[in-house]
Length: 126
Image (cartoon, one colour):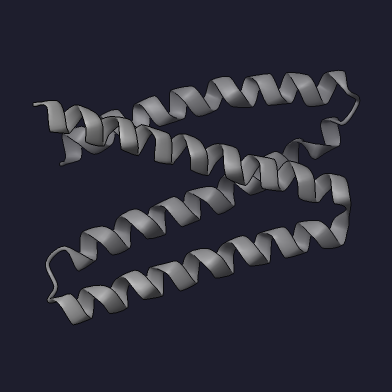
């Protein structure tokens, strides 16, 4: 399991670094370098959501059905509260900060889910 996760994290970090480089260049060329922090705030919110999803799934794998359902529901609530809190704070700052934060969250979360789907497909072929 650790071998799969380390490969997953390595590929995720590599693809996220490439996307971050493109986004930073785009923000700097548009004169919006101050929004780079908002991009990383979105990444942080997505990282919390991903970690919660993985941890709750791993933890519920060894539980009975009712307890596993509670674990997964608790994880969903934590992810929703995290997303709502980060995006609500960003929206209070400005529309541009909200847009870049939401873009960072969606980009990081989308890449993570895309890599998970890829690993799932690859493991099914073996």
